[in-house]
Amino acid sequence: MRSPKIMVMGVGNVLLSDEGLGVRFLDELAKIPLPEDVELLEGGTAGLELVHLIQEVDFLIVVDALDAKAEPGSLFRFRPGDIQVLPEQFAVSFHQIGIIEVLTMANILGHAPQTLIFGIQPKSLAWGMDISPEIQALLPRLTELVLQEIATIQSVGTFTSTSTAQ
Image 1 (tube, rainbow, N blue to C red):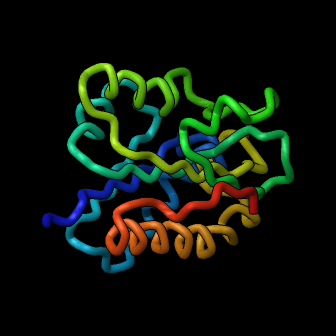
Image 2 (cartoon, one colour):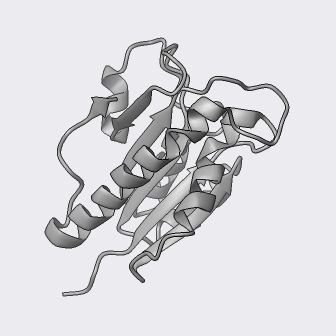
């Protein structure tokens, strides 16, 4: 049996401070030795251009800023199918073409990977290349959670079973 292909994608605009947290997270994750079947992808603010890239993997873990009208640094873990049950105040992405649209198009074209999204409530969306200290402090915990998901996928072939706000 082959190992599942896993992609961790960080998305966001690095010019808008905390909006770029997904990309900044990948910078941190890249410092850690990862299994060879794990690929890191900086999605930036790309939209439908990502479709062909995600179709090549079995599992996709996305890290992005999420506007949940929550306390800055609040961490949310959910699957795309959970979006129908999220309260109206949640905006899944700050981007014009979000990951949900990308996944929908991948599915229409024949294959969308099993997907898990980690969304973090940003503190600042002001112009700037640095993320807020409060968000930066959350990255080690986020790293633990993503590594746990990778280990679970490799051992049991699926994501861990809980969706939570942390």
